[in-house]
Image (tube, rainbow, N blue to C red; front, side, top):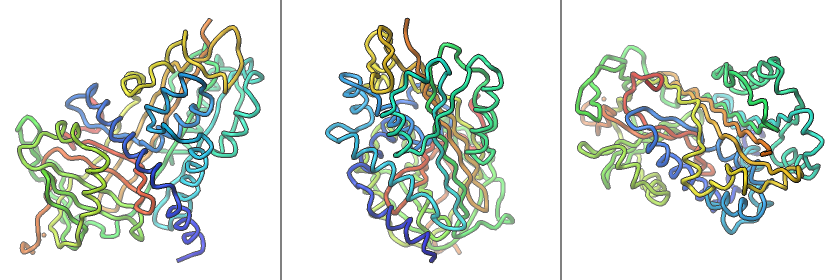
Length: 396
């Protein structure tokens, strides 16, 4: 193991477990809210990307807006400086994990030229020091700015998300953007010759044919409390995909409704090394561009979207006007195949001023399922998905 890996592991093991638990609660809560809006379609998000962008915004919130965001982000009772320090350590720990896993995080601030002088130096410094955010000043009415931002997104997502913006809100004062990119090779790669068309039962009971990858071997496995779960590690085993399959007769939406951080952590902690016959669909999925305003409002931070009451004086002084959040948008893509997994996500916040040998156990993912990609060193959830139909690459 190289020195870079040792440093990465040391940082990850030192991350505040309390904040990781809060982050997991935020991830599950957001997935729950989004499934209320997007019934009967596949979902895939990066809770890490969304929370980083929102914490960048949180640093500029004041008074009731700050309290509301703390509630939504599960940060009540924590000092902002401690939150920043933990997120900085998180980002640093995800660098140089290993040669067969690529994981990058990029942050940027795009400010309208006429607005940039109003941004407080303290706010710019906090985002630079804790989130490595570069500040770029542009004319939002210039079509070249859209092209430049899209090029930044494409670069930061390894080319997986090529076009994020069609146009910019000309009235926007600034944009906060986060991008996360992940690519990992399975520890136990799947043999492509074993990938066959097999049956997958939809929530409606209808059966369809999917490309089902297959493997037999020892995996960490769990069975109990209404579900089975298996851990599929990448590279040297520090990052893994967890596939959670509710029992037959259990609706996936209902399962997600009742899922809590303690229950998820309990599933993971009780896994045991078991020989299983694994079958899982090959998957290619794009989710978004999805606006998160309604979901975040239901989670408690509606005041941030209210031009009359939002308080972001920590970002800039624009009296007698107020800054408010016009949109929080998210887009995520994932591809799961025999070699491994590639995933990317972008979150943007628009800010405006208001004037198997068959003796093995079987784990056959042939019905709707939940999955997440997790850094097991810290417990941090990087990506999370709910799959109803593996053949649907995009929302219909």
